[in-house]
Amino acid sequence: MEKPRLSFWQIWNMSFGFLGIQFGFALQNANASRILQTFGADVEHLSWFWLAAPVTGLIVQPIVGHYSDRTWNRLGRRKPYFLGGAVFASLALAFMPNSAVLAAFIPPMFVGAGILMIMDASINVSMEPFRALVADMLPSDQRTLGFSVQTALIGIGAVVGSWLPYVLAEWFGIAKTAPEGEVPLNVIYSFLFGAIVFISSILWTISKTREYPPEEYEKYHPVDSKEEDIGFFQIFKDFASMPKTMKQLGVVQFFSWFALFSMWVFSTPAIAQHIYNLPVTDTSSEQYNDAGNWVGVIFGVYNGISAIFAFFLPAIAGKIGRKRTHAISLFVGGLGLLSIYFINDPNLLILSMICVGIAWASILAMPYAILAGSIPSGKMGIYMGIFNFFIVIPQIINGIIGGPIVKRMYDSQAIYALIFAGICLIIASFAVRFVEDKDETVHLS
Image (cartoon, rainbow, N blue to C red; front, side, top):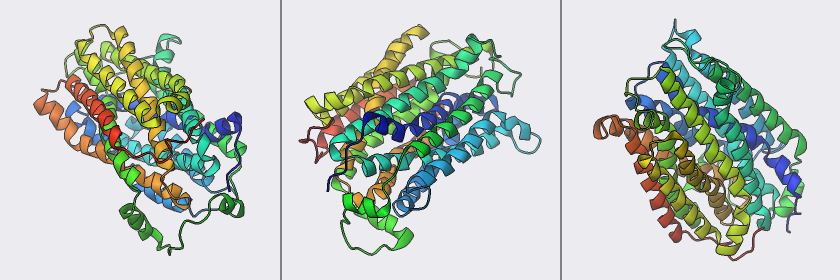
């Protein structure tokens, strides 16, 4: 039985919580390295601290996916996970830039890394059930639209989150520098505001979205098999029998997210050194904080472009296919990252980030739209969680080896990490051709 089609605004409300999730995620991406360096972290160790994020995702998301497939209470099926994750993520956002208050007991950079782990675990608890919710609620011909709306909201939240420290400093005069070892006020206020936006947007989705109760859900999602659920160990069984399309997409995801992790971790030191001509040891001067604020601005640019481009993805995919759309987008993003090496004017980085934004929009939508058609309906949550392995494993590998490579092979010149990231996106674009898309012949709107 085909599920009823939803209106655009129903899809918008259903996905609105992603705005807050990405608001917090953007603050983390653009500022975590700067905060950790302020607290004393060396550029070589940045990727190690960032390991907290993908490691927690590796553990949390399949577990959340497994149990969200089997949850139903007064709040709903996926919504309890949205809310629980939002509460803890908001608390972590408020506390991370204030980690120095515990300096008398624990080095603040270790407190900051711990808060980064809690924040990312909580974001993961909120995030992946949103992917499953689209597949739960939408008929197959609306899935590309559903994931594209999510991508647009991700872009909007990320633009504001990325730009906020710059706006507070340059437009409202809030201090953008602080004594050595302290985080500037513009960053602290941005994280506090991000905590409010995060919880508020999740509450909007919870209040405006009705999930199908179990008896209605079963009408639209007939049981695919009668296999016995063996509890937590079912996760490992499902992993072993993952669909062929998921394995093929895993290669694409590996190179895509290896590249993204490099960009998030090393953009601030790379741009400070390569474009602002600052020494490696400069992590607290006004010029360094200008570079950090500008990284937030250009990260906002790529997220803004992704929000706009997301609305065109369904039409483009309908014309040339989802695989070709994704391949071209990744190739353009790779060229954007490679172009950074040839730039001397910080303003020209906007052009590079326009290219990255096209890739980011596709990364957030196309793999999930392709994947959803290959997953048994009763296992949507667990397989969306398992699919996250192909996002976090490349980040973990990059986190382990990325810092030492920058230190020893690149002589602490982080720009070369961005060059390699561009090459990885181009490799990912070629890997798309080997992916089987079962629904590609269906016109998606």
